[in-house]
Length: 300
Image (cartoon, rainbow, N blue to C red):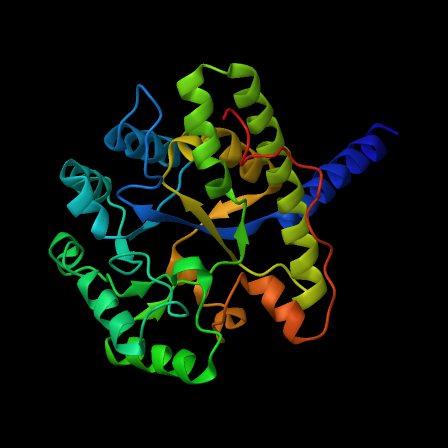
């Protein structure tokens, strides 16, 4: 009887380990809008403090790489924010191009204007990356071009310059909270801040579930993920809780190149990968909850 119980116990442990392994998934972390996300900072913080919080939190969770995508125009507006790029590189994290001025290929005056904006974005990146690979490009607004001619022209231009496109498969819309968090912090409205955090983290939980279900529905498997975050004060304040949720969900942190080596990333396009692939295949995925705070009017 003891031997039987021992055998059953071992079997349960093995089954649990197999189930745990099945829940695990690879995910690369990417961070947009270095060195400055949000035009105004909440009182009591700085660009460097936000970046320092990001880096320490990512390191604490064992994130081996976090590509930081740069909008170089911020350096002209806030020259001291250059310290963010240096801090990012000292942490061993790479920098990529997000255009000079966060210019959408759809709204640029011409294809040529957009191309020059991409080129201008390289100037603070190349010297800081040295011999490391810096040729990853993140499209502003994840818009690769609604006009087919401009879209294919953009792809061709990036290929000639040796760029790989940094795709996105999952986002928690952290950017949406940036301005409201700044206003509420300035007013000392902690009740609204806690309500925002609660809503955001519930959305993180929901989006992780949608990500897993969507991947299985569209691809029949759990593909490696690429997460989009933004280097803002709200994002920094909630990052530890976000990563705790990813850890609990089975995240295994990998590099961007490792994630995008999966064939699911072979065809770039506008928007997040899983959602746009589902649309291309005529599949309907459930959307996020519509029950939300009015962030645009909060703390005004």
